[in-house]
Image (cartoon, rainbow over all chains, first blue to last red; front, side, top):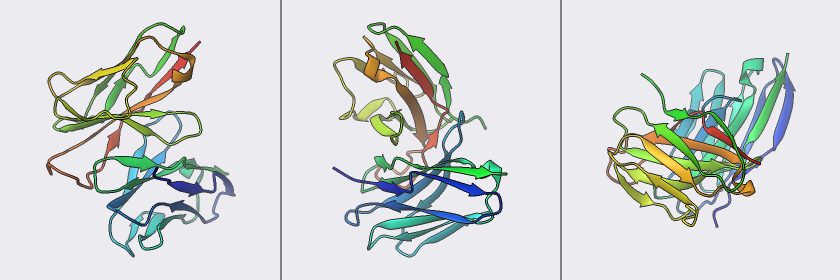
Amino acid sequence: ILNVEQSPQSLHVQEGDSTNFTCSFPSSNFYALHWYRWETAKSPEALFVMTLNGDEKKKGRISATLNTKEGYSYLYIKGSQPEDSATYLCAFQGGSEKLVFGKGTKLTVNP
Amino acid sequence: EAGVVQSPRYKIIEKKQPVAFWCNPISGHNTLYWYLQNLGQGPELLIRYENEEAVDDSQLPKDRFSAERLKGVDSTLKIQPAELGDSAVYLCASSSGLAGGPSTDTQYFGPGTRLTVL
């Protein structure tokens, strides 16, 4: 059974704080790692698809890194804003179309 | 361009009743997915279609769940009869599926249908 772990489960930060969270996944049979942001009552939104060890991707104030050898990815948010409040999901893809999701990290940014 | 459309957004039914969810994927997307998200968990794949063919339905509880994508466009997921444990969010997603094999195509999600079984 594939195990994708995300930590922390939830996080409360103040507006302007920078924050990061972790996704751990199997280091074998790796194909890609996907990050999604899911705001309440909206559709999950794709942030990044990462495939290469050492990959770093950036979208505005959000960036992500990937280490496939040790099986982890970090998501960073610089200068958090209230609109960043959402659940951040990572999903492991191993050689097929199937995504195996973690349980997510719920971020709350207080104004 | 419209995203993935799902309806209804919310559904409340009594146990043992049937229920159906509808999904219209992004135009031109060949691959369609149905996911189940239980409270506090990540989405789990129920079924994946390539055009009208169900290519992975290994996680679909076939005793009560069924799905169809008759013309390779929109899709319906049905539960009959519903049980209390079926209360969850049912998500539909689509991807272009042009590669014809494993790819890193982004899966675009709809807003989901939140089902409550009483």
